[in-house]
Image (cartoon, rainbow, N blue to C red; front, top):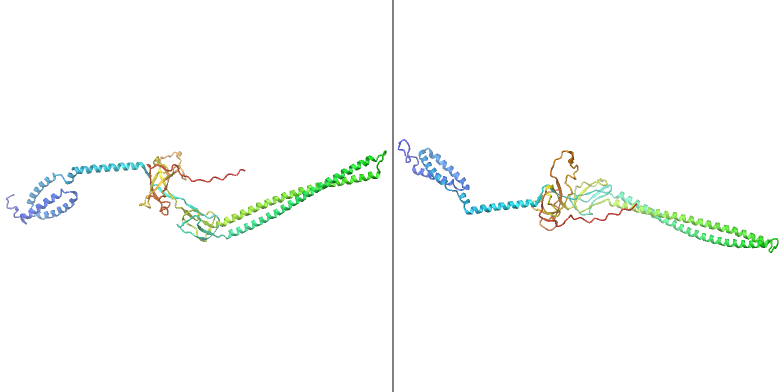
Amino acid sequence: MSSNPSEPSVENAPGGPDVLGQKLDRIAAALEKLNTLSEQKDNGKEEDKEEKKGDDKGKKEGEKDKKEGDDKDKKEDGDQKKKPGKFKRFITSPLGIILIVVLLAVLVIAGLALWHYEKTHESTDDAYTTGHTHMVSPRVQGLVLERWVDDNQPVKAGDLLIKLDPRDYEVSLERAQASLEQSEAQVLQAQGQLSQADAAILQAKAQVTQARAGADQAGANYQVAGVNYGRNKSLFTKDTRAVAQADVDTTKSQFDATQAAFNAAKANVEAAESNLKAAEATRESRAGDLVAAKAAVEVARSNVDNAKLQLSYCWVLAPVDGRVSRRTVEVGQQLSPGQAIMSITPDDVWVLANYKETQLEQVRVGQRVKIAIDMFKKHPFTGRVDSIQNGSGATYSLLPPDNATGNFTKIVQRVPVKITFDHDDGPGSIKGFENLVVPGLSCEPVIDLSSTSDRGQRVTKDRPAAPERSSQ
């Protein structure tokens, strides 16, 4: 220390040597805390601030003594910095090395698992749920009298939706039934006339038979009279005169009479045959009238059936099971045939996913799919690949691209893939969610390429045989 009496000594400093020693101890403790772990650094900084406040207060009382104490503390601090920290010692320890190796192994395994997952799965966010939509429209014109359904109401196939005014169609049905009865009466009349024609034919045939019998008898008489006349004529000659002239004249008159009777009998036969032909022609005409009357009955009966059918259309029924949507009909509204009044959406929905063409190399029908719907984040669904569209979305668009125009730009195309939900009792089944999963929901399907198809090609329903075409 300096012996200059003008400089203040430690003993003469305010507070005495005890206060200075305490300050030095605080500074040393603060320096030791700086070498602790990172979580204790904040506390050390707060203590340093407190020590700095005390230092600022003691600066004015003994600057030289403080400098000497600071030099001493710097030496001690340098010695402490040379010693390694706890974290560094932990890393270099055997336990630390083991933990680092385990961590690296976990990271490598996780990376391989992620690579394998990306290699065996294909996903897309360009997907949504869809389903059948059945448009309901009346088949006849009419005024709406009753409406039995409301928006989003579940219905069964055959349930009554609306009722139209049936009075016009009831009148048409009565008119058609009256026409049918008239046609049936005409059939009975034609049958009666045909029976009369049959009777006339029988009578004409009897007359022909009778006329032919009379002609045969007249012919026989004519032959006998001719023989008698010839014999008497040959006996009455100039030389013999075996018979009298009166006998010859008598046989001649008999011969002439029988000849006239024979000619009349032949005329009667021809007349009877003509009557028979006329009767047969009349019968054919009456048979034609009967056929026409029966055809008129069939036409009238078909008109009755059509009138009944038109009348039944006044009750508009649900075509399938589902829920009502987009209802636009109200009571008192005048409807036209084919006018859309509501839609029926069944509960059968599926996913339409638009995958990139570069993702479909290993996609096959029947592969397993996990479906995440944005509406049900806590309930992932499962399904299967049902079919792959035979063409990209651009192929079936309203204005397909024409690459021959000269402005070709290659872009990745997307192909729609139909994915059906599982309906079994599994954890990812749609069972129990049929009324909640509606068409139009955003979803993200993930196809498991490692799964094999257990259905082969797409299952198709049995189709009925086409009706045979009638040959002209």
